[in-house]
Image 1 (cartoon, one colour):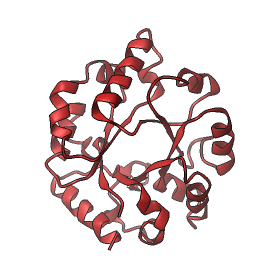
Image 2 (tube, rainbow, N blue to C red):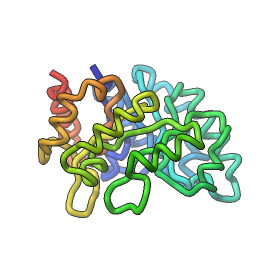
Image 3 (cartoon, one colour):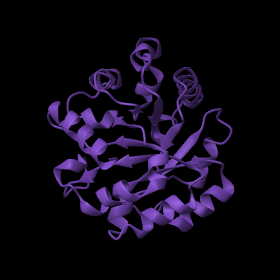
Image 4 (cartoon, rainbow, N blue to C red):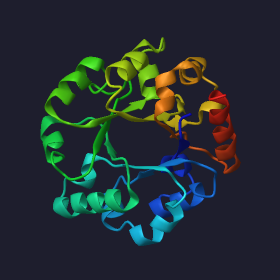
Length: 235
């Protein structure tokens, strides 16, 4: 059975502060959490000593950042802080969206696992098996499957299956959600997207890694509804 939890983006409509988002989620019975640190100040000012006790019962912790959190005049401090966060929280790694060769080079030998996720149909790159095959020939990064992004690129889910099969040994976890007309992440249970739900229900390899739900809820009760829905997919 896959560990199940949420990205802190799931409660993004309640607060922008990472520590407050974590407080919302740790009251649920979850096994995994992904902490979004998408601004330089969120990384540099992250209250690690305050947050660590809240995560003591979470088995799978990851961080989601972006290149702008490190590409500034305090780049070394940001990278060092991300490394400290990963080490002290025993995090599986830091997720980034696909970038340029120069940006990837900034992440070589940083002292923490770097994970790259696949992009949706609106992005010009970072979507195909060929792209990630070339990337992983050059850089020793891990892989995160965003299943909704894969669906947008190929509703038959053949692409999702190929990404899992090809990069199985690099796959660290799966981002789960549905999306609205503006491609914003929303809970899966809202639409019960059959191809995504069927893939998760029937794909044995997807159950070997954690499921991190990114769907942004508008009410706290929706968190439990979504959590129950995901658990039912594993029955």
